Length: 118
Image (cartoon, rainbow, N blue to C red; front, side, top):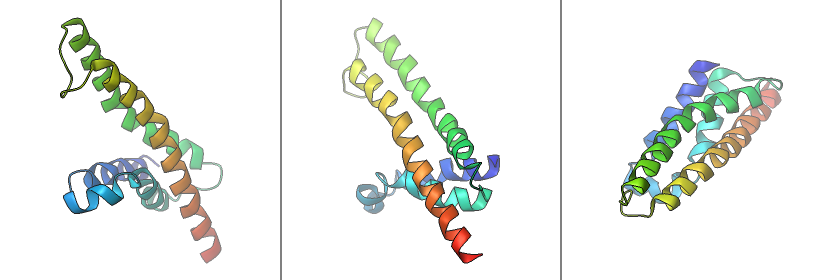
């Protein structure tokens, strides 16, 4: 289960720096990661939500660091990557449920495809 969740997170981060894929795959990267990671983890019907929660928990770690850094920068009256620290905090918080939902849908579709093939 953890191997599949880590694969899912790694795939999400691999898609980010590729310039050509960036505009198309980044919005879909949680879905793609959930689809591939769910099939690697062989997450069954009962474990798909647990799988997506593990993946989201791993993905939330950088978001927590962004939130902490943004709070520090806000107290120093500085920007975070050229944007207001509050906006950075909002984006980091929105990223967590976005990742969970996309990953969950990808894992569900992966499970459905595996169930139909068996």
